[in-house]
Image (cartoon, rainbow, N blue to C red; front, top):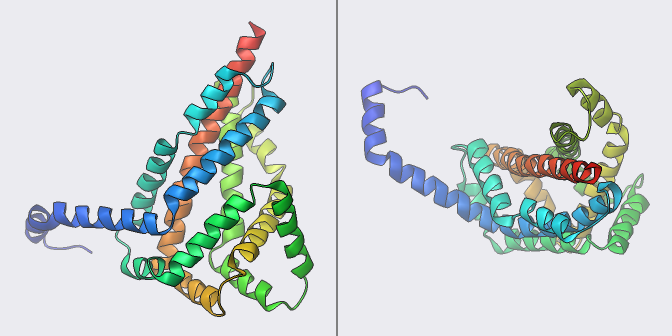
Length: 273
């Protein structure tokens, strides 16, 4: 990638701003095609519900208007989307975006995105999530073509390990927020030990959720679509997309988890006073 210094300077002056603008526009087009704004909104709604659970389990005195307002501020969808977009752009870099745009803006690509969004929304209902998990357990260990197809997609995109790492990192940030907020006295090693003590359980739960979600989402697709999606995921642009999405959403969740930890710590200190 090294070029003649003078030529590089001239190129930057002439086409640098234009090229950056085009790439930024293309990234925004891709994020829109992927349904990322809708995903963030779903995650915000999930987060508001989680805030209610957190208040019941950890906040002295339980849920209050003040706590609800704090959770609403933490789960600010504009800030969440901005974080995902910024981290996505930084990680995606100058990867070839054209094959991704071609797929995700196509009729088939938009069907995939729509089914993913519908499944994510549906699985907010505990009964539906339980049914989806049960459907996966029924297929596990069988010679199901559907399961084999989903397994290749999961393995290609490293979805279990990547989601596991994201979950453990978010847990670490929550504990760090509690510590920095004065609610706990734990060293970094203490936090790591506590977080990793749940690794096996978290891995099992993550794996089951990922498979349940994908089986539910992709079942209506015509034969060959998931295989085509998997092949795209094996390309350099597909791998860049996967890395960038995890970078964006993991950063978003890390920020939120830390903020929640600090918020819980403040509530604990107020109660003590």
